[in-house]
Length: 519
Image (cartoon, rainbow, N blue to C red; front, side, top):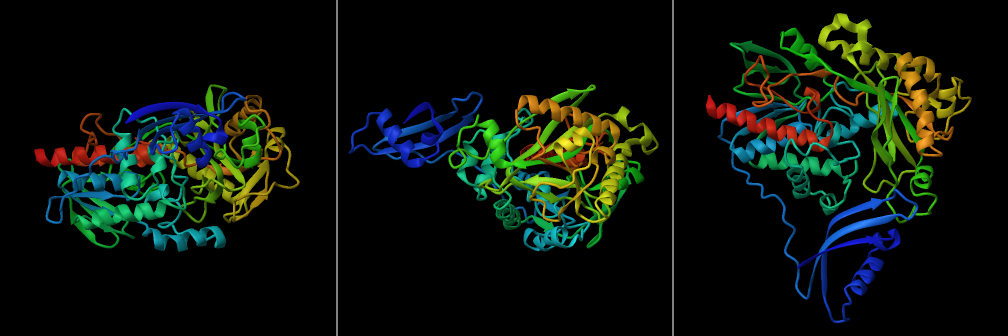
């Protein structure tokens, strides 16, 4: 078995017959030689006009390769084991539950939303009928917001835990093998639900419990511990340890913790708009005019610009994707983006957001740690009102937005509830609008063709991260005030995406197990 690195033209790298022919010629094989190979890494390098695809593979001649090594998951029967209670069944909650089973503890999970199959009806109601179920939507339900997302798996959180464990776990539960070797792996919103359901079945098979449509309503604190929790379905029950993995949109949880005088902290976050271009335009820009639409993956981009001491940057870029209504309440407007596995939609969309610091929230200081949350809510409601008090989104063409003029018409869009032309430059808070206007001009210089009236800006992209942090000790991962509370994932302010949230969930499961073993 040998390792080989290649730098190839796209038409060779991404067309299987051409790639195999090239590889056999490169290795100078005879017709009778049997070649076995497996990709280990693949990355498109489009920095220059001469686009290359860098590939690393292993191969063997006349003998099959050993199976790809993945993490050995040692799940135990935990049906009679000590329990660990987990609130939320998004990525942090899912991997916390899986890790508990490996450690010999029984996860008891409460998820306010529905299972993926039942959840689909509520998503349709949001998209088609403008009806938002506050417990079952694009944010809440089995798998959390991650289930109906692009399934992007790239993360920089490599020092926090094993990225490989999370990717291997997804592969173990049915994800395609590509995620193990692509430089920027993704699964796709059309495939994620089956994988999430498979993770649920593993948890149930080994004795864990998952309670859907079970919302945390209250909790009791005694002697610096949470002694009981109350859910809408099962009422009060005792807990020994609690992993709180409720996601950054579970605002009622922040209000509950604040009411029970459990320490919270305001933190910086970001808000902005979702920008939608024709995917062919983004391909043309990123692939330097080369016609690779049917060969290379749909092109993505990453942009950042400093404007008046604030970062303005792209967030959750979705090539070949579509925009969806991500509100969690009837009287708000929130948009998000996602892509199917093939990324073959006609449009590219990305959040373009402005960093918001605590000093930007002076009008909301009276809300203390919840200042950012209240600001977020106020803007979402304002945009909802601008859109006609429905899930139709306020929108404007990009150049019109920058020039401060109404768009007489809008471009076609993937957003099914529909768009309504509105002066986004007036609707958005001035400090956000002005920075976005300046940034779009600069982005056009970095990516010639990006700054165009062929693009719609659609508002509002407001759920990039949590405006609230639930603090915890860096070593023990316990809340500094409540010794058996383990805040986890994006909702606690310690992750940003499927992989990092999964890693954080695993870490919190380890911490909860250590706590229980010591007590």
